[in-house]
Image 1 (cartoon, rainbow, N blue to C red):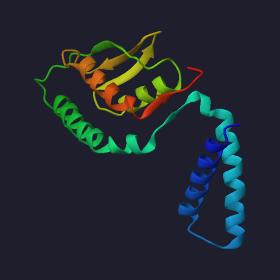
Image 2: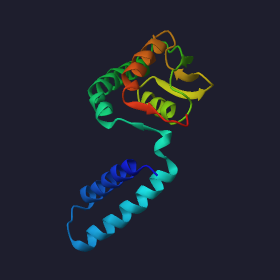
Image 3: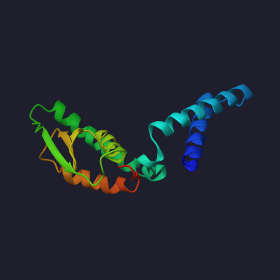
Length: 160
């Protein structure tokens, strides 16, 4: 058992309990500790530290770029939806990723699914397949930029 991972997760889950409950009554603290221990145990069973990890501060540092890209993408999708002369060139783009199959690749696909206009819809050994509103856009180049940015925040595990 990875003691560091257990302590970090337990502290974060107990901190979440305190933020949500906003009470320092002894009974609430005891219940929070019990809930944090149970949640930590479940967390370690469902996603052991060997499965990979996220560098939270590096991921948070990418939030402004993500929000800006999401805003621009949302405007583009709305423009395409409401402009009758704006053709949609839907289709699929296969993106070759360096993330191994497993949680790191799943997290990358989840993050990129939040960007308007693209949706991961399948994968093979070395690629993620995206459904796109406009296949003539540089989707693969954008995904490569995103992968380079997120590579410092998403750490593949030993078992991947």
